[in-house]
Length: 261
Image (cartoon, rainbow, N blue to C red):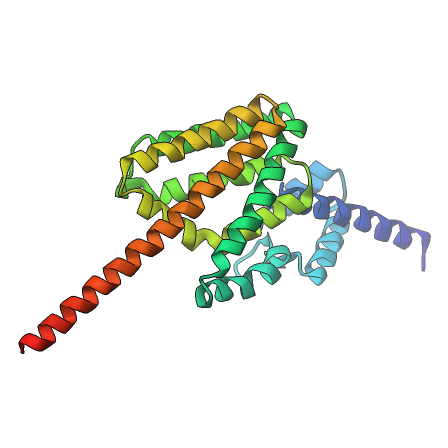
């Protein structure tokens, strides 16, 4: 094998390593499309053949894939193994939700504490922008018109904090958890829309988390997140009780109608 060929192989490994790092750091997220080949090669300062070889290595690993119609995309392989079975398990075993929230409290509170310590100025700018968006949307109140955007903004705010912890495991595990719990977060927010007081408490909790991270107060950030998760758990329990009551009422109505015929 020629020395030139060995050099190309080594360069492709270096390029693949850099792209892997971007995926791990969250700069490239599941579903993101890579830049056009010409642009990415220029950015990295490498030849297009070397870039193609590096991309093929990551395709073989399952971290990238090509779609019909063109383009190379980041797969969700780092998260899918976690989310696929757990999403189904949560549907079949609602009692697991309490365990999941307990895990979320540990994970997200420590991520927030680390973010308070480690966040760069650029991180704080991203978190500030995410908070500004969630606050602006929540300020509209429990509006059906913007509800889906409120859910997305809520998740994005917490995810941005997790990424600012500068620990790849926190970033990816949090993203995985949010994929699993998205439906439950959606249902909880719909329940919280029923009471303006609860909606205001949710806004205050977001503000407390952001203020603690911005002030680089790790202890306050940890406490603020734990209070938020505890409130979410209270909300889930209240929603479950409400749904049980509704179910009983509907059952009584059906029985009354059956008796009247």
